[in-house]
Length: 381
Ligand code: NDP
Ligand code: MG
Image 1 (tube, rainbow, N blue to C red):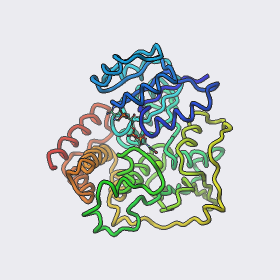
Image 2: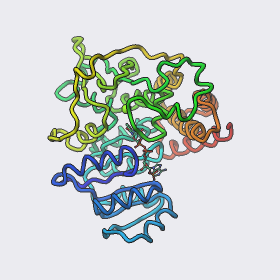
Image 3: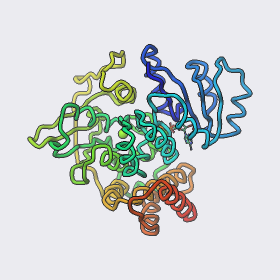
Image 4: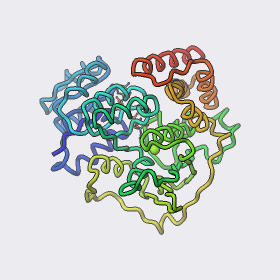
């Protein structure tokens, strides 16, 4: 029986993780759950899974939850400090990193320091601190198994292969809701249009990132750290059907791909059960029904965020942290109706031009860089 701690259990990946775990009660047991503030969903989860502990980041929401009559003897903690404490002291085997944005970094590092398996959905952790996390994983024999569908696909294609024989990896991208729009459309794109993803139902932040293709940019950096590959060996190809989740091309020209429906339950399950594959009843892929696959090159001029991500990956240091923090603030402002969609890359560029890059940053430098960038971009809006 593996004990599972889910960070961000009330979000899209969190809820899907519990959907997976519900099917394997004899293999996985929930010992901890965390949320920012959505306690109604958390209350249902507590009553079903009876975790030992939950952490609600928001103090008021935690008090409200404490006042409710729960059908479980679960301890309720609150605040960022207790989130870290839980990651560093709760008895668990696997951490599911499903918080959104920079907030996922610190608790993930705690799990790495304890040499745990981390089923990682929170790509921002590797974007902002890939170098540090990679070093710490080696030092503490921690294991990161990607949940992000593209990276899970690559991970699966690499089983039984030598990394030295990889010529390149090919990350597929749906292209998001604005694939067929002109760049000028970004001046007037509404929040609703940007949130209307053609293939995936996800949290708001990643859905906006998909519309700007920053999501693919973050994934390029995530792949760089997960698989230790340079920029030249990481390609992006648009595949609007989102059935091929990604591919690996080897030095003999052979390409391996992993296919499946656009449903996060499979990569989540794989990250929990690896190296085993578990029987499940999830819907199967009906290829004749899908009919055809198409592929084309991304437009780097239109999707500036994707280009920026490749650039900061090459720069290294805290440049990816600046990009990430600027993007988080810009996305938040766009979702609040304060800026146009076209201003997202504009603000990120401003931050990258203004803030200093620090190489081989430790955690303190990364936190500092994140804060400085947030303050800088917020002041521009
Ligand atoms: P959601 O916004 O749906 O969920 C985020 C979760 O984190 C919620 O439980 C939320 O709590 C909690 N949370 C948010 N902010 C904080 C904070 N500051 N401190 C503590 N907890 C917080 O996001 P997704 O599930 O869509 O995405 C999660 C991560 O997984 C992201 O990094 C994303 O890039 C990645 N990912 C997601 C995919 C998807 O299909 N959704 C696919 C691949 C990767 P509350 O509910 O209270 O707000
Ligand atoms: Mg993805």
